[in-house]
Image (cartoon, each protein chain N blue to C red):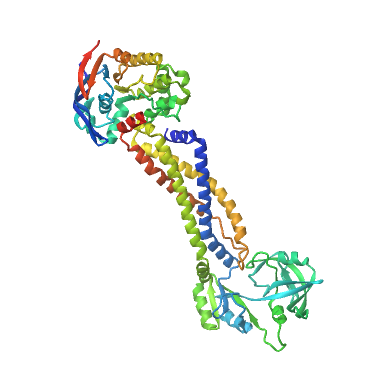
Length: 229
Length: 398
């Protein structure tokens, strides 16, 4: 596990909210090895989602740097950062955020279409991914026709569409019941076993328990960083 | 995928999309009608003036053709001069007047044109033949309908009628030899045309009075001969007449009908603005409803420009669908409005206020497409430019 896929150095993120300066992340340094499974945990408002956004390049640090696969993503232009995310990072959100107008397979095709993958290959990979997450029979269903757990499975399949090195998940079990949450934990573990590095932000102790490494945050700083296995 | 997503988004809220398309269709119909109105009447008038190939009209000095009761005296002499002018190929004299036709106990008034049937440019025979002798006439549908007369019937016609004495003057017995469509007559005008000499002789007045006068001459210039040159030669040779070319007549029509064009311009601009605002509102609402989807698309790597393009395509799709629906609606309403405006007093029935020409439809469609693009650009760019992390946090809280 010595091959570092992501490195964050002295990350800080400050912003103004309601006239007050909020220091959401206050000097976080983190290295994540290829193939690792990291859970970031901590109380609400401790800055873990902000940290995940900084690591994924959908927010910019006030100071500090984020390097993924040798690229300083905090220095990329907006267009370049978008392109970087397309090819290197998969995102899973608490609220799934599937495109409601598209079917399950079309949702998975979306990032592949953006990456200009030909349609026949997109459909083939889309079906493979649906089978991987156990939803091969639901390819033509729209999000509204799927349960929460099924929607999150499709979201994971979408995140894996362009074979990213890194999967970032923000509270992926947050909107799921206990049983579906457990299935999701198993699915993420499987994704990790199949070679994808995962960083997950969660309150869910079971989900954190499935990770190899748990990073505890409080008040914008890392207070504990412990490997579980 | 872009088109698929745009289509899927539009069909996701079918009723809303359909209502927007209907709104744009009404706006497009109005815009098309106004484009047709602004150019149609002019084009229609020009076609009418040139329909029989006469490029010049000669009226008494200082008047327009049939604008007053004034006539050009010494018509035969004027005709002789005109025929000597280089570039003039055909001269058609026209005398306007009124005839009273006695049908049993009834008297029917009709507008009469005295013409040279061989070279006239005022009517087209639709049935029968042109007058070949001094006591023959052709009549309009409306006249034949009102009088109950048919081709082959003889009529007692008079140029003067004293209602108190119930006496007629300038009477002749004329035979109907043809049915004609009078090009310059207003709708439902009862009209007849008879040989010029006959109408001149029927004019009231003492027997010694010189009746050799006409209301106007219509003149054809030789092909390839500049009409303005011929016009100048005529005005030099005949200082007692005003010669106007089709172009001059068009300018005068433009001046007199500038009201219609201004109205068309204003209403057309309003229609376009309404369509633009309608689509802008719809696209803005649509973008605001799916801010979460939009920022997630950006988070997973979809380029901002592609998101903007997708939303702009939605705007264009609504505009173009509405415009195509509006084309049909516009043609139907134009026909209806045309039938109302065609009864405008004194205007030839052949004038179309709303003349459909394909370039009008393309023009209206082009304007609406540009409006659709503009309507989509601002809300989509705004939506696609929102900070991803902040918007996701707000969406999560909201």
